[in-house]
Length: 65
Image 1 (tube, rainbow, N blue to C red):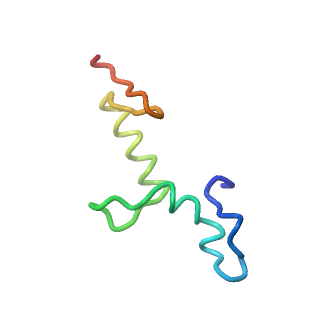
Image 2 (tube, rainbow, N blue to C red):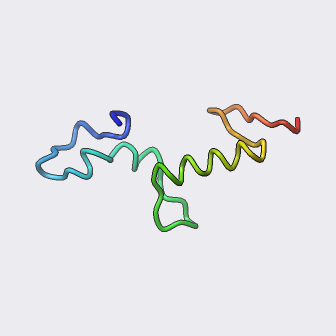
């Protein structure tokens, strides 16, 4: 949770920015989606893992190579 927060934002002025501001900067909404949250993020990781194409940082992990 703390990694998603923007602790420099004033929660009394903009609570959403305070609570979710860093998540929004780190995980922009893909062009083909209208929303993007933790469930979509985890779903995509699981889908990639099942296909053997999971990215770990900048290292591509693949069962096929």
